[in-house]
Image (cartoon, rainbow, N blue to C red; front, side):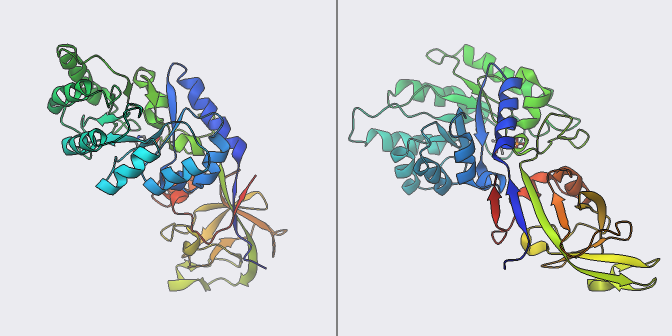
Amino acid sequence: MPRPIHARIERAALQHNYRLAKRLAPQAQAWAVVKANAYGHGIAFAAEALGGEADGFALLDLAEAVALREAGIRQPILLLEGFFTDDDLELVLTHDLTPVIHRADQLATLARRLQARADPQAPAQAVYLKVNTGMNRLGLDPAELPALLAQIAAQPCFAPATLMTHFAEADGGRGIDWQLARWQALQQQLLGVPAVGKGPCSLANSAALLRYPATHADWVRPGIMLYGGSPFAETSAAALGLRPVMSLCSEIIGVQTVPAGERVGYAGLFVAERPTRVGIVACGYADGYPRHAPGGTPLLVDGQRSTTLGRVSMDMLACDLTHLPAAGIGSPVTLWGEGLPADAVASAAGTISYELFCALARRVPVRVV
Ligand SMILES: *Cc1c(COP(=O)(O)O)cnc(C)c1O
């Protein structure tokens, strides 16, 4: 008998969320962002659930891109960090992947490789050029763009480049206007460059897609919203019309009734102030539950709200059953998901739902429904 923990992953919820993204950005095509093993939900699951309808898939691990092709995905696949070595380029060409070029030397490397290609019938290579408009992480200086675009336009082995940028604070108070101003200045500059037409553009992550329709452009790049997480601290996923895709489910495997004054768990972080019925849940940090979630983090027992008590262990955590007399051994527990937004758990633990999803441990069996 395996431990009674599993992640329930719902195909229809992912499809619902993707369709919502499409409805909200009706003029744009939408990359389904499936990096990090589809935010912990499984790349094969994402391919299976969205293969029939996604306009394209965006990720950064070459092995995951190949896995998508092997799963039969024929749509465009965008490599968000481009390629890392010359060997990667073989796979980029073989599997018809679209690299994001974020350094000028990557374009030169790619151009050399394309020119050396024996096959004159090969289709033109699609590329994205990532412009740094203020994230200051990856991306080309806007001043580099005219020359790079001219290079691309001069070489028939390239399809017209798509320009992209990434917002640093679309979910927060500073917003996007300051980045958009830099982006628009670049567009103006490019209009004045001969032989460089305005190609397609891609700007919006989930937060921008939801909050700033003016950024939808040609391709949006929703990630977290596909999995039913809200990108906004102050707006719930449900209020955005999103459905949770992953539910982390376990059971009560032990019950202790402790008198006032007793402590529970490592370091005795929970001290009972009154007689307390403590439920022990088969879920710990080795399953991906955050160890830094403090006592008081919400969970569901038998569908009813309760809270964690004390410190999260490797394989177990404790919760309060005092107000749930009918709950006991075998009662189902939801750590997050259906009925309890991952965002609520993440917020209690000082993180974001992205991290909870991505941290789901390999040892947790997945049930796709
Ligand atoms: C991860 C990522 C996204 C998706 O971001 P969400 O906040 O999950 O919607 C979009 N664009 C790029 C470049 C990314 O790296």
